[in-house]
Amino acid sequence: MHSIQGNILTPDGWIQGDIAFGDTITRIGGSAADPGANGDDYILPGFIDLHVHGGAGRDMMEGGDAPHTIARLHARHGTTSLLATTMTAPVEDIDRALQAIGSACKARGKGEARILGVHLEGPYINSGKLGAQPPFAREASMAEVDRFNEQAPMRLITVAPEIDGHLALVRQIADAGIRVQIGHTTGSYEDGVRALEHGAAGFTHLFNAMPGLHHREPGMTGAALAHAQYAEIIPDLLHVHPGAIQVALRCIPNLYCVTDSTAAAGMPDGEYMLGRQVVHKCMGGVRLADGTLAGSTLTMDQALRNLVSIGLDLADASRRVSTNAADYLGETRRGRLAPGCFADLVVLDRKLNLKTVYIEGEACEF
Image: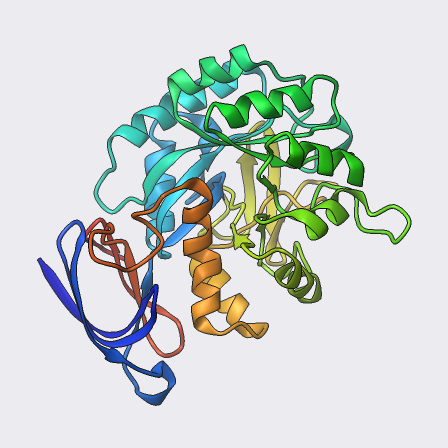
């Protein structure tokens, strides 16, 4: 059992006191407090990242032990659970990745973030909006989704709804209990509205790899801003301007943050792999040879600091890197600090630097 003290962010607000836990939280005691009025550490729910391609020089598409290495890297930055995210690729590459991810989902290693399942980002996307995805996009089938799901739990699938047959598939996937996000799409505003009506629940890296907002053609971005309850956004301040993040915050109640991190996360400048693509880490970002942004080097602790830097208060920023993503997946025992929830939490100093990370009660070494 552990017991730590500080400013604890609970679902009912801040408490200055102590939190006791084993693998789950057993007790939170103290009194309501303004965390700005004292010098204690902040204790927040552990971060939840639903879009992770890689880290520590490894890529999810490699298979083997790559998911474990990646999960350790992100745990050191406060991510306590994540979705392993695939790339558009030939089916044999996806199978290799899913077999490794499925194994990692069953057995969390020491010091690793919990892998909750898969975010299948492709191949069911539009070849006209690949972004950094390799050119292996194709039409979807529920039979293939079912086969993938047998190898590793599908929790989230990115789909371009404008492709023939995909609207019906969105409904089938949603009815199977898998979240569907709209992304890597050339679709119109009307396509987005229809996809939401058919069971799509969110949008993949909002603003990126989708038509932008124009007052006579609102596009897929317009559909998200007008109608979405949930959407993911990359707050590295490179993929999306802070002003656009503020627009999304005003429009989408449960906007949540992802890293879209690649093998380059936690690594020096140089060349890395993103699926079958060579990417270059330089100038604070990750790019293809032609300069196209290709994922990020962002970690969730930096995402939190970036949100605070553009004006969010700490409690709101915490929800955007944890609670909203948990709610989106239906993970009621993660993303919040309350008795009975998993003891996934982070301790930060007054400058929001990580001091300690606990994953299901295990203290992770930095």
